[in-house]
Amino acid sequence: MKTRSPDLLLTAIAPVIWGSTYIVTTEFLPNFSPLTVAMLRALPAGLLLLLIVRQIPTGIWWLRIFILGALNFSIFWCMLFISAYRLPGGVAATLGAIQPLIVVFIAAALLGSTVRFISVLAAVVGLAGVALLVLAPNAALDSIGVAAGLAGAVSMAFGTVLTRKWQPPVSLLTFTAWQLTAGGTLLIPAALLFEPTMPIPTEANLFGLVWLGLIGAALTYVFWFRGISRIEPAVVSLLGFLSPATAVLLGWLFLNQSLTPLQIVGVVLVIGSIWLGQRTGRVSRENGSAAASARP
Image 1 (cartoon, one colour):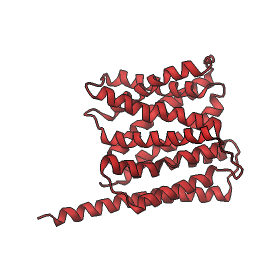
Image 2 (cartoon, helix red, strand yellow):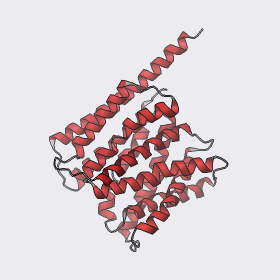
Image 3 (cartoon, one colour):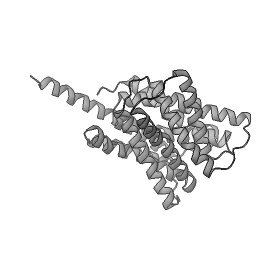
Image 4 (cartoon, rainbow, N blue to C red):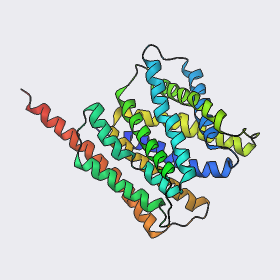
């Protein structure tokens, strides 16, 4: 499969914007509970897109969309927030960064993709880069938090691969609307059962919710699902390393947080892992061309 630079750059917009989630949540939504924010991020955006596309799933796609909505949003975000609350941020981010490595093997099992050494190497390099970016030397571990972090990474990995495997005969905007709505709907019981009553939103709260919902969900997931449909899942998942890198850079720019030499090395490793990921797509393309030319 050909990995074109415009496709890669457009897909990379999503994790870069996702990197703003931490600063927006802490600065504009300090009194909101995590599952409530997750639900308000997904459901209104999904319903708004549904009003635009005016199309609902049919047949087997009802089941598939709720599976994808659960994997990409409901389960992933629930596990992410549990991990974030029970672990230092660096540990939670590093656990989440194992997702590209999981994608390599899930894609091999479900899509028949070849497990290439360069794909595994790129995932390991990116994981090391994220660890240098966010992992503190005195980081503490919590068994439930670690389990939640790993479960979230597995959920997102399956969601990425199945999103590639199940491509409905509809537009990307419709596909995104379906998944956001399904994921947000599944988050309603969790938010009602386990979260306190939502405070009356202020102007700052509304700005944060609009940013996370319209920009951080509706827009970015159109780009993300577009990338999954055009680029190998192992390459797409590596772009997720840009999210913690962006979060660190935004903290340095706007919150006066420090940026150490090791963190700079981490940024370089993240960029290097994405470059290695492109090599994976190039090798696949060259092998495909060689196989085609060898046919009689």
